[in-house]
Length: 235
Image (cartoon, rainbow, N blue to C red; front, side):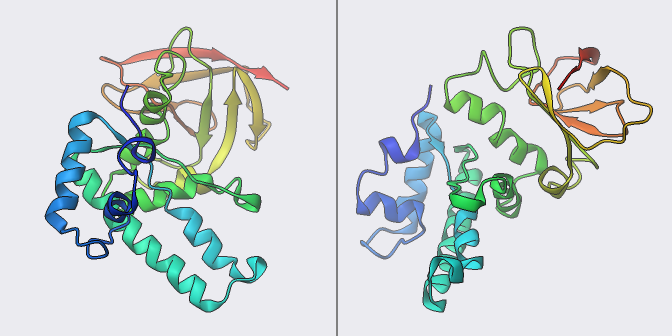
């Protein structure tokens, strides 16, 4: 398993300046920063950017007692973190999603995915940071990150195509299964069955479900097309 950025390489102010884009603060050059990202990619080190919590603090600065100067610094951090994420992605560094959510920010965690798309990822790549990449980072590849026997039955159904617009994942959640039990159901009650049929597309990380015209996001990369029936355990 690869190491994480903050636990391994970011051990001092000089290294931290690289991840935050402060290339001149300690005399670090852009070439040194790029060399470090290349080394991270070689080692399989994960980078967890945590960009969006700065947006949350800036937008709610009055609730935290922050002045406009603090909001300006937070927005500056967003710009630097976004640029570092863009460069890390370009260098092939493995990226996992982490929101660093606090207080009432819980529930907004997936807004981090919007920043990843702005950093140059496709929606599919952004989804992988919160699914397959996250499972690998935690050393849980045999428990999480796939729809397969023995894995946790965690599925999310969204309205709209997640590969077309990452906003559908953030704002369009309509149905959630956790550990095989349905814990969120905002779908219409009529014409609903107790089975959910998933159709896997070759090489895709999205499973399209014939269930209330919703797309079910699931981090799985099958070698061919196949269908899977999931029996719903309703609460």
